[in-house]
Length: 426
Image (cartoon, rainbow, N blue to C red; front, top):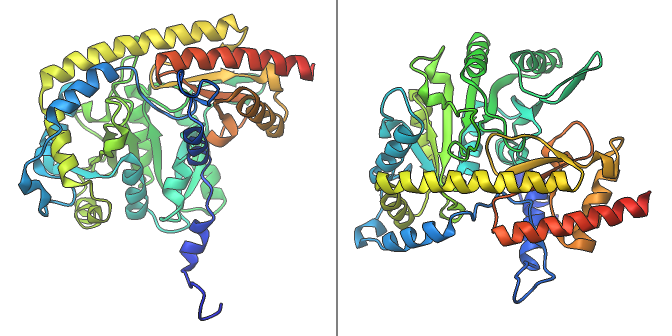
């Protein structure tokens, strides 16, 4: 390169042209954002994991604590001020039904759960190592573990066919098969990553399955990272069981729990992510590395005050879960009215919709053709399953927790677009 050019590292060469699907289309939606009054033809975003169900409750509460004292403008703990860690510990203890109070000293805060995943990939695995994860899964997980830490994602397909029989849920047998497949191909497996409740399927992993996975990982010296960012976003009788509820684990030093304020509390912009770990070696690493992903201290102070009123949090979560359940039921009925099927989820923000009757099930190219048609002709954005590492073409993730009026408008466009697409292709 010329001396007048810009030399960058080999790591940066990979990153500079990196295209992340979810971020790309989130930006496209922002550039032409739907507004009933000012931009009624704009794009309806039913692809991004946004929670607007309780803005009328969240915003007044946030405004009441949106102030900070001058001393928080000084340096503080890079892994989270004690006031925030105490507030998060109290919320997790109360709502996760933990077997003992969460110790704030086991909590480490960084700028969002994305940051938590990035830093754990760096700490728990070497470049080229493998982390197992059930798929389909949140699409950015690949970026989170690969972009800087250079760690690979190895799929555990959840929806499978064997001898003509279909299996739709995660099992320990599927975990073992994926591990053995990775090892047989000479990969060094270092961890398994779980989202519970899962994204996008909305499954809640029961305590029996979790313990089977923890025991298997202990046998093979694997870490377990459990992302519980949707822990309180549940709407079924299938009760959520936090990892922190277990009185004992096969190896507590290898089980790490993530949480944040972006989903259950709808405060993605505050960028609050937290790692719970009892591993002393990892804790020492986090105290060093969290400085590179600090949350601004005034934001930490505001977030702490927001969470400290446990009685308000109880009221909020009760209302939120009622609205979440209502929105899910309303949208699943809309899907049925359209003559389509969706997974009967238990938690999270998403409908996992089967559009194979519309675009077929034989190629991801046809899946993307439908995706582009809906986006370009009907200005509605939903996520194609391929971008969530789904093994079967024809599935789409649809968010049902954005502004209710936008969800309704989005479903109107989906229904019309699907009819026209099917007619044109028929």
